[in-house]
Image: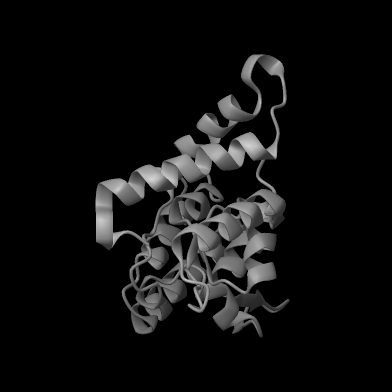
Length: 194
């Protein structure tokens, strides 16, 4: 059910119910790199921030590269990130030389760090450097959390709403469920909710 259509419907309902018509409302989106959410953000030109937990999972359990990526993601500034990336780059080259780094993992690392690896083993900034790092850099996120763990149960709950007893109940019921949850949060948090 994770489609851009669903996210778009929730967004429009939310705007119509809680935000004055003349108020230009944009919000930052914390996402898990799913195609539906990515398309929704692109369609509405909303800033998209990657969940650190999902990024870390790209690199597997108990790997040295995962530990290096975690340090990069926790960098408090561009200077600290640059130092952490330099150290990680040397680890990447060592793993690659030893045949312990597959091409897919290397591509993910280069994408995350906004780099290109030349044939002679040198790292260069990708033309997309700023586009890539602004999606996860803590010092650029403002008040956006680094992880979407708090929303992980949403998938399980929506599956129960969408297919109770194996029957598809449609987008309308899903939207009613989400709007009810939003309304309950608004009542609980009163004026501090938006």
